[in-house]
Image 1 (cartoon, rainbow, N blue to C red):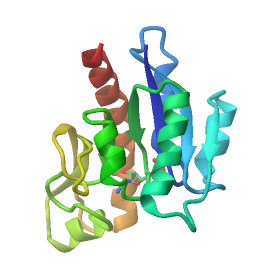
Image 2 (cartoon, rainbow, N blue to C red; image 1 turned 45 degrees about the horizontal axis):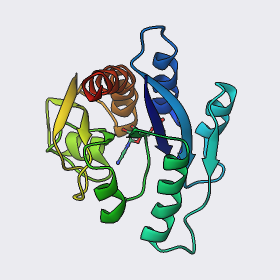
Image 3 (tube, rainbow, N blue to C red; image 1 turned 60 degrees about the horizontal axis):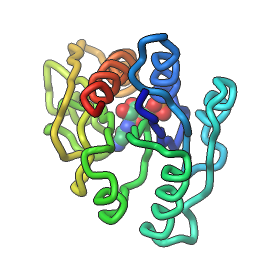
Image 4 (cartoon, rainbow, N blue to C red; image 1 turned 180 degrees about the vertical axis):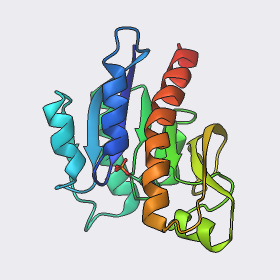
Length: 189
Ligand code: GAR
């Protein structure tokens, strides 16, 4: 199986779903490391409970490229072949991305190219959109840019708040990311 490293900053529900899916006997990928720039990210305990080794260090006080070089070294020490961003809330440096060209995936909570950046659900509701959703894309140096490889759509209901919409999109994120990562890993082999 393709060796995957997952980067998180928070609760790690997408990471947990990727780890769960990787337990299937026929999974084309295996999660070998979970890394975080937030030392007390909730997802770290989930990874540990699932038996996945973790690495966590605050980025504070380091230049972006310096911090990313630490992540890069840890990924390479673990023989990671494919990186999955799962709620990793920091821009990656161009140097880091160049070193992993075509080998970093991200999940973003919008129907890209709509609503790059933050507050995606509030912006979709404010715009009066009929649908929201999530996208898995290959990471390139531009924020939330890069080829979209999978999308899932969710209807926006009257009375939806950013929170209620986020809850329904998240259910789709968990399914979409596991499928898209598996498909991508299969094609790398
Ligand atoms: C997810 O909704 C993910 O799509 C989003 O953060 C959440 C993380 O939740 N990512 C971004 O906004 C990236 N810019 P999780 O930690 O439970 O997976």
